Image 1 (tube, rainbow, N blue to C red):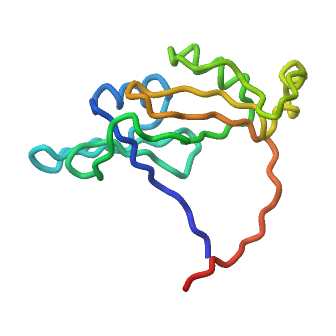
Image 2: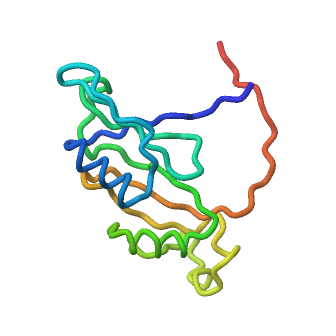
Length: 148
């Protein structure tokens, strides 16, 4: 049985500002933006090519303090190109970082950055995101999840 993660709730203070950041600056697709009654609104956005969406809203999502989410991660095949795209779109992203201590990897680029090349940024509320380079994936065998 496959278990897929399809939606992550992102806590924000201003829905319209967050929607503009995710759609206009990051290029996420706006799947829907619906008001479902007084004080209830849900906006679902999906990164290009992703099977997982983010949801922002009010009155329909669990209460979490805006900016409290950390560790959201996007995966790309070229972190250097992704960094350039983020900067071009006005996102205050950090520099490309190599997380294995081998600073020469950045100069070599390409596949040398697989799994260890990252860019970090935050949304307007301070929710923390990472962009990781993975251009080749090892086949993963399906395993049973133990219950009980």
